[in-house]
Image (cartoon, helix red, strand yellow):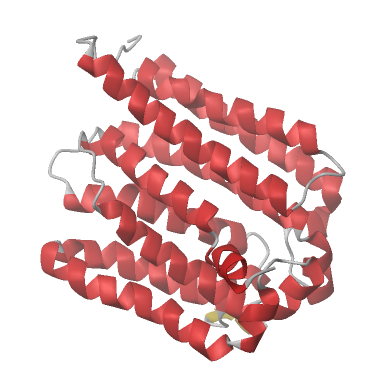
Amino acid sequence: MTSGSALVAIARPHILFVAMAACVTFGWLLTGRVLVWLAPVVAADWFFVNLLNRVTDVAEDERNGIVGTALVLRHVRAFTAVAFGAPLLTLVATHAIAPLLSIPRAVALVIGLGYSYRLVPTTRGMRRLKEIYGAKNLGSALIFVLTGFAYPLTVAERTAPVATQVLLVAFFVLFEVTFEIFYDMRDVEGDRAEGVPTFPVVHGMKGARRLFDALLAASAAVLVLGLATGALGVREALMVVAPLSQRWFFRTRWPDRIDARACIVATHLASVELLVFLAGNAAWLAAGLPANVHLR
């Protein structure tokens, strides 16, 4: 593999793309504005989280055969400097434009630090989030909530009703954690060797699959509940396509094809779904059709 290919793999562009797509799409749903300028900010913050994770997880990544690990190992200090530099530079720039945005950004970056370094006090001493059962997944989901929901809400004046916001966040968190489980299934051997208590390590692959299916069902149920109560409209309910397609894709890979490529494809599929949803709504509105339909 060339150095260029390794650098692309290290940056995890599939994560950056889905985070940016989520920010723009949910930002539009919640504020009515297409906040494209926030996308590179989100990319910078997720770049920080991803790169720090690569730097601190070299041993685990070597066991799991993660692409680019050898390059990270040779240049740990340089990659660490870049990881901290990217968000700090953009933090200065965005603070001048939108000072309040610095608050959720700082929270996201602190969670990212806690994910990679032993900063979390526990009864067993200082731990990383990923060394605490369940905290790894919830920490990552919370960063996505911050970059996809809190960032747009912080910079926008008009917002959706609180009930709508709560239900969309609930749907998103339940759905997002299924990706965490998918990735943890890929990394189960390395995580087990390093003593990282992921769901597949603790409950086995079949137990993790049951949780995966339950979370997908729960995320779809949130949309149905929102539609039935009137907190969400048909527009938001169309997002049920996401958990349905996630289950279909997973079933095509289970149990022998859950690898790095499958995880990347699943993530890109989510990005495409978000952008198609956004573009479809833009075309719908351009045609003069009603913005949304509520059953109640």
